Length: 266
Image (tube, rainbow, N blue to C red):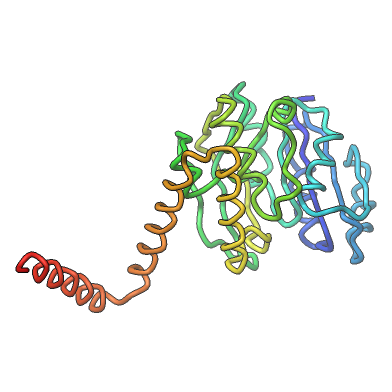
Protein backbone atom coordinates (compact mmCIF):
# COMPACT_ATOMS: atom_id res chain seq x y z
CA UNK A 1 0.00 0.00 0.00
CA UNK A 2 1.47 3.34 -1.06
CA UNK A 3 -0.68 5.77 0.93
CA UNK A 4 -2.78 5.90 4.10
CA UNK A 5 -5.27 8.78 4.18
CA UNK A 6 -6.33 9.56 7.74
CA UNK A 7 -9.37 11.68 8.56
CA UNK A 8 -10.05 12.87 12.11
CA UNK A 9 -13.57 14.07 12.88
CA UNK A 10 -15.70 15.34 15.75
CA UNK A 11 -19.29 16.53 15.29
CA UNK A 12 -18.75 17.76 11.74
CA UNK A 13 -20.91 15.45 9.62
CA UNK A 14 -21.27 17.94 6.77
CA UNK A 15 -17.52 18.53 6.52
CA UNK A 16 -16.86 14.81 6.94
CA UNK A 17 -19.03 13.87 3.98
CA UNK A 18 -17.29 16.48 1.82
CA UNK A 19 -13.91 15.06 2.82
CA UNK A 20 -14.94 11.45 2.17
CA UNK A 21 -16.34 12.32 -1.26
CA UNK A 22 -13.08 14.01 -2.28
CA UNK A 23 -11.14 10.89 -1.24
CA UNK A 24 -13.27 8.18 -2.80
CA UNK A 25 -13.56 10.08 -6.09
CA UNK A 26 -9.80 9.95 -6.69
CA UNK A 27 -8.64 8.33 -9.91
CA UNK A 28 -5.60 7.08 -7.97
CA UNK A 29 -6.58 3.99 -5.97
CA UNK A 30 -3.38 2.77 -4.29
CA UNK A 31 -4.41 3.96 -0.83
CA UNK A 32 -6.27 2.89 2.28
CA UNK A 33 -8.72 5.14 4.04
CA UNK A 34 -8.88 5.48 7.83
CA UNK A 35 -11.42 7.55 9.79
CA UNK A 36 -10.98 8.32 13.48
CA UNK A 37 -14.14 9.81 14.95
CA UNK A 38 -14.09 11.18 18.49
CA UNK A 39 -17.48 9.82 19.51
CA UNK A 40 -19.51 12.40 17.60
CA UNK A 41 -23.05 13.11 18.73
CA UNK A 42 -24.25 14.55 15.42
CA UNK A 43 -24.92 12.60 12.21
CA UNK A 44 -21.24 11.72 11.65
CA UNK A 45 -21.68 8.03 12.45
CA UNK A 46 -24.41 7.70 9.83
CA UNK A 47 -22.14 9.38 7.27
CA UNK A 48 -19.36 6.91 8.07
CA UNK A 49 -21.71 3.95 7.75
CA UNK A 50 -23.05 5.33 4.46
CA UNK A 51 -19.54 5.14 2.96
CA UNK A 52 -18.30 2.16 4.99
CA UNK A 53 -17.52 0.10 1.88
CA UNK A 54 -14.88 2.68 0.91
CA UNK A 55 -13.29 2.86 4.37
CA UNK A 56 -10.60 0.36 5.36
CA UNK A 57 -10.79 1.13 9.07
CA UNK A 58 -12.93 3.39 11.21
CA UNK A 59 -13.69 3.87 14.89
CA UNK A 60 -15.99 6.18 16.81
CA UNK A 61 -14.98 6.65 20.43
CA UNK A 62 -13.97 9.36 22.84
CA UNK A 63 -10.37 10.51 22.51
CA UNK A 64 -7.98 12.91 24.21
CA UNK A 65 -7.89 15.54 21.49
CA UNK A 66 -6.99 15.92 17.85
CA UNK A 67 -3.39 14.69 18.16
CA UNK A 68 -4.44 11.64 20.13
CA UNK A 69 -6.88 10.89 17.30
CA UNK A 70 -4.21 11.43 14.65
CA UNK A 71 -1.88 9.08 16.52
CA UNK A 72 -4.64 6.46 16.54
CA UNK A 73 -4.73 6.80 12.78
CA UNK A 74 -0.97 6.35 12.54
CA UNK A 75 -1.18 3.15 14.60
CA UNK A 76 -3.57 1.67 12.02
CA UNK A 77 -1.77 2.94 8.92
CA UNK A 78 0.01 0.42 6.69
CA UNK A 79 0.82 2.72 3.76
CA UNK A 80 4.29 3.92 2.88
CA UNK A 81 3.07 7.51 3.29
CA UNK A 82 0.43 9.13 5.49
CA UNK A 83 -1.79 12.09 4.60
CA UNK A 84 -3.91 13.74 7.31
CA UNK A 85 -7.01 15.14 5.65
CA UNK A 86 -9.33 16.10 8.48
CA UNK A 87 -13.08 16.62 8.24
CA UNK A 88 -13.97 19.75 6.29
CA UNK A 89 -10.77 19.59 4.22
CA UNK A 90 -10.79 18.13 0.73
CA UNK A 91 -8.41 17.15 -2.04
CA UNK A 92 -8.17 19.83 -4.71
CA UNK A 93 -9.42 17.69 -7.61
CA UNK A 94 -10.17 14.07 -8.47
CA UNK A 95 -6.76 13.43 -10.05
CA UNK A 96 -4.51 15.15 -7.50
CA UNK A 97 -3.14 11.97 -5.91
CA UNK A 98 -2.29 10.62 -9.37
CA UNK A 99 -0.47 13.87 -10.16
CA UNK A 100 1.59 13.72 -6.96
CA UNK A 101 2.59 10.08 -7.08
CA UNK A 102 3.27 10.07 -10.81
CA UNK A 103 6.25 12.30 -9.96
CA UNK A 104 7.88 9.25 -8.30
CA UNK A 105 9.25 11.22 -5.37
CA UNK A 106 10.85 9.18 -2.59
CA UNK A 107 11.59 11.81 0.07
CA UNK A 108 10.47 11.46 3.69
CA UNK A 109 8.24 14.52 3.41
CA UNK A 110 6.51 15.55 0.18
CA UNK A 111 4.47 18.73 0.34
CA UNK A 112 2.56 21.07 -1.93
CA UNK A 113 0.32 24.11 -1.85
CA UNK A 114 -3.16 24.55 -0.44
CA UNK A 115 -6.19 26.75 -1.01
CA UNK A 116 -7.85 28.17 2.08
CA UNK A 117 -11.62 28.49 2.41
CA UNK A 118 -13.90 30.07 4.98
CA UNK A 119 -17.64 29.34 4.77
CA UNK A 120 -17.00 27.81 1.33
CA UNK A 121 -15.50 31.07 0.06
CA UNK A 122 -11.94 30.89 -1.25
CA UNK A 123 -9.69 33.29 0.66
CA UNK A 124 -6.20 32.65 -0.69
CA UNK A 125 -3.72 30.08 -1.98
CA UNK A 126 -0.74 29.31 0.22
CA UNK A 127 2.39 28.62 -1.82
CA UNK A 128 4.98 26.95 0.37
CA UNK A 129 8.72 27.50 0.27
CA UNK A 130 10.87 25.12 -1.76
CA UNK A 131 13.51 25.28 0.96
CA UNK A 132 12.80 24.47 4.59
CA UNK A 133 14.85 26.21 7.26
CA UNK A 134 14.73 27.35 10.87
CA UNK A 135 13.56 30.73 9.63
CA UNK A 136 10.68 29.12 7.73
CA UNK A 137 9.52 27.29 10.85
CA UNK A 138 10.02 30.40 12.99
CA UNK A 139 7.46 32.21 10.90
CA UNK A 140 5.26 29.47 9.46
CA UNK A 141 4.77 25.72 9.14
CA UNK A 142 3.81 23.04 6.63
CA UNK A 143 0.15 22.17 6.27
CA UNK A 144 -0.47 18.56 7.25
CA UNK A 145 -3.44 18.59 4.83
CA UNK A 146 -1.07 19.05 1.89
CA UNK A 147 1.89 17.02 3.18
CA UNK A 148 2.67 13.35 2.63
CA UNK A 149 4.77 11.91 5.47
CA UNK A 150 6.67 8.67 5.14
CA UNK A 151 5.19 6.28 7.71
CA UNK A 152 8.55 5.15 9.07
CA UNK A 153 9.42 8.77 9.95
CA UNK A 154 7.04 8.49 12.91
CA UNK A 155 9.15 5.55 14.15
CA UNK A 156 12.22 7.80 14.05
CA UNK A 157 10.80 11.10 15.30
CA UNK A 158 7.94 9.76 17.39
CA UNK A 159 4.22 10.35 17.05
CA UNK A 160 2.52 13.70 17.59
CA UNK A 161 3.00 15.20 21.05
CA UNK A 162 -0.38 14.79 22.72
CA UNK A 163 0.51 17.38 25.36
CA UNK A 164 0.20 19.98 22.61
CA UNK A 165 -3.20 21.43 21.81
CA UNK A 166 -2.47 23.34 18.60
CA UNK A 167 1.01 22.80 17.22
CA UNK A 168 2.18 19.20 17.58
CA UNK A 169 2.42 18.93 13.79
CA UNK A 170 4.69 22.02 13.71
CA UNK A 171 6.84 20.40 16.40
CA UNK A 172 7.00 17.15 14.42
CA UNK A 173 8.08 18.89 11.20
CA UNK A 174 10.65 20.99 13.05
CA UNK A 175 12.26 17.99 14.77
CA UNK A 176 12.11 15.81 11.63
CA UNK A 177 13.85 18.38 9.42
CA UNK A 178 16.17 20.21 11.83
CA UNK A 179 17.13 17.40 14.20
CA UNK A 180 16.88 14.27 12.07
CA UNK A 181 17.74 15.88 8.73
CA UNK A 182 14.97 14.02 6.94
CA UNK A 183 14.68 14.41 3.20
CA UNK A 184 11.91 16.53 1.73
CA UNK A 185 10.57 17.71 -1.60
CA UNK A 186 8.25 20.51 -2.62
CA UNK A 187 5.85 19.87 -5.50
CA UNK A 188 4.35 23.02 -7.08
CA UNK A 189 0.82 21.65 -7.06
CA UNK A 190 -2.23 22.66 -5.03
CA UNK A 191 -2.93 19.52 -3.03
CA UNK A 192 -5.95 20.41 -0.94
CA UNK A 193 -8.67 22.81 0.08
CA UNK A 194 -8.22 23.76 3.72
CA UNK A 195 -11.19 24.64 5.92
CA UNK A 196 -10.31 27.67 8.07
CA UNK A 197 -12.73 26.60 10.81
CA UNK A 198 -10.00 24.37 12.29
CA UNK A 199 -8.69 25.25 15.76
CA UNK A 200 -5.22 26.18 14.51
CA UNK A 201 -6.72 28.75 12.12
CA UNK A 202 -8.64 30.65 14.80
CA UNK A 203 -6.98 33.98 15.72
CA UNK A 204 -8.02 33.66 19.37
CA UNK A 205 -5.74 30.62 19.66
CA UNK A 206 -2.71 32.38 18.19
CA UNK A 207 -1.03 33.40 21.46
CA UNK A 208 -1.34 29.94 23.00
CA UNK A 209 -0.01 28.46 19.77
CA UNK A 210 3.02 30.75 19.89
CA UNK A 211 3.65 29.72 23.49
CA UNK A 212 3.57 26.06 22.47
CA UNK A 213 6.17 26.77 19.79
CA UNK A 214 8.36 28.63 22.25
CA UNK A 215 8.20 25.70 24.69
CA UNK A 216 9.20 23.34 21.87
CA UNK A 217 12.24 25.48 21.10
CA UNK A 218 13.21 25.68 24.77
CA UNK A 219 13.09 21.91 25.02
CA UNK A 220 14.69 20.88 21.71
CA UNK A 221 16.58 23.98 20.45
CA UNK A 222 17.36 26.26 23.43
CA UNK A 223 20.14 28.07 21.54
CA UNK A 224 17.58 29.56 19.14
CA UNK A 225 15.04 30.83 21.66
CA UNK A 226 16.36 34.42 21.64
CA UNK A 227 16.27 34.49 17.83
CA UNK A 228 12.70 33.25 17.85
CA UNK A 229 11.57 35.83 20.40
CA UNK A 230 13.22 38.60 18.36
CA UNK A 231 11.50 37.45 15.18
CA UNK A 232 8.14 37.36 16.97
CA UNK A 233 8.75 40.91 18.20
CA UNK A 234 9.67 42.12 14.71
CA UNK A 235 6.64 40.40 13.20
CA UNK A 236 4.35 42.14 15.68
CA UNK A 237 5.98 45.47 14.88
CA UNK A 238 5.50 44.93 11.15
CA UNK A 239 1.85 44.03 11.67
CA UNK A 240 1.45 47.12 13.83
CA UNK A 241 2.67 49.39 11.03
CA UNK A 242 0.62 47.54 8.41
CA UNK A 243 -2.52 48.28 10.39
CA UNK A 244 -1.90 52.01 10.59
CA UNK A 245 -2.80 54.60 8.00
CA UNK A 246 -0.06 55.87 5.72
CA UNK A 247 -0.26 59.33 7.30
CA UNK A 248 0.20 58.01 10.83
CA UNK A 249 3.08 55.84 9.65
CA UNK A 250 4.83 58.85 8.10
CA UNK A 251 4.28 60.89 11.28
CA UNK A 252 5.74 58.08 13.39
CA UNK A 253 8.82 57.77 11.16
CA UNK A 254 9.38 61.56 11.28
CA UNK A 255 8.99 61.57 15.06
CA UNK A 256 11.60 58.84 15.44
CA UNK A 257 14.01 60.64 13.14
CA UNK A 258 13.58 63.89 15.09
CA UNK A 259 14.33 62.04 18.31
CA UNK A 260 17.51 60.61 16.80
CA UNK A 261 18.63 64.07 15.68
CA UNK A 262 18.04 65.48 19.17
CA UNK A 263 20.14 62.72 20.67
CA UNK A 264 22.95 63.43 18.20
CA UNK A 265 22.78 67.18 18.98
CA UNK A 266 23.32 66.45 22.64
